[in-house]
Image 1 (cartoon, one colour):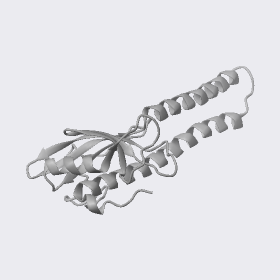
Image 2 (image 1 turned 90 degrees about the horizontal axis):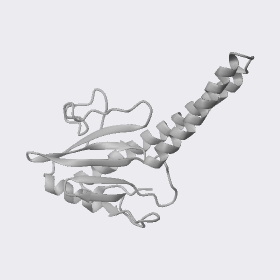
Image 3 (image 1 turned 90 degrees about the vertical axis):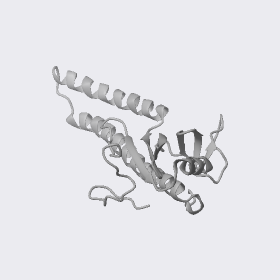
Image 4 (image 1 turned 120 degrees about the horizontal axis):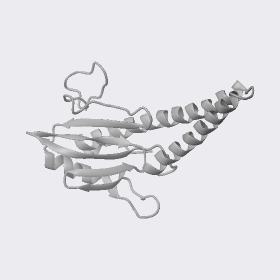
Length: 191
């Protein structure tokens, strides 16, 4: 289907009133999505099930399917499968399929994996703590503003890398999800 952002035509599958708006949280990468599909609800659930392989307890699945996780009834939770390398910023996709008359709506969220979010919180917290220590020391002695800027640069650089990686993975996951629901046979291979 067609994709777009601001100023997209009304037929855009990612927009359907207020339930399909994209929002990002400022501190942790998070995005809501909505895909309006022309296929019936049961067909959309079947197509989602066809592109999701169960996640093994340990390791990565060896499969040609683009996602690993689960689809149960109208609900799903999965992430993209990697064959050659691991990307920590791949989003966890969680949502549901909602019948809308002749078609359906796939709505949900994409967020960082809990372990990655915790790592980023601890990493940033440590650097913020160092920055606060430097500012407290500034009350008693002269500090090197270069030290403070390098600490803040590390935090901002980490968040920028995470945000850029997450957003690019969200776009790919959303495209794969949309392609899978519209036509499983034409879903492109994942590299």
